Length: 314
Image (cartoon, rainbow, N blue to C red; front, side, top):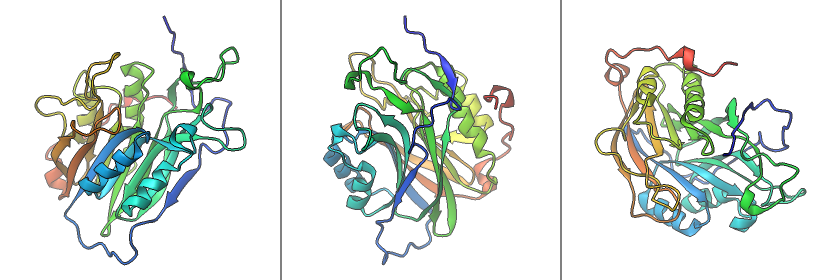
């Protein structure tokens, strides 16, 4: 049996470059965004960008205004040393920010390190990017002196995180949390990571629209997750009715819903879709229409308290 120990992200290793955030602007300067009552968001774990042309083809056809991607490579051998986030943004003529989740020790070199992480792309201006490196992590990925440096073992430095940035939609600020929760752990660990994000969201005014989305690696429609989401005043547009798998069946896992989009504040989600016919990754893309609303319409008589007792301690 494999024992997964938990450790704080304040561990002694602080690999160079992991706190850097890359950004670029490729949205046409001549395109002046007008007032927008709604925008379309796509969320997708793209499996490093191993099938990059298929990823770009789908996104080009979907024509989203905002894209949140997980497992995006930077300078990795397996993806031909491309800057995948920049490639997608340039092809789609969008602005982007990219945050580094892990340094991939078997994909680069000492002088030319490789990373993978999360990328947020938008037709609108992006600003104030930052990382939330979760306090609780699994030590599964950490290199060990007695293990060979092999690609199969995926030895890494860093830890799971959320990439946060502001999206300026015609003068209205939308805050986007782009998450990738731990795959090598249990739901208690993933729940603690999600709660850290929900706790962070309380720093914003109730008048600010929020989305929390990405690869959560567990089912947010089960257990105590729905209650925690409601208590944090977020809504889950994908939790109604029959659950649709966002990761296809494999030898190790049957298809399951593990990718999600939560909305909070004066914004409502509609037309929730999972594109199960789209290939290009070991996850399916999701899309949701986000409509800006009045604050009173968003949360009629909702409780405002987050479950403080369940938040990870500092």
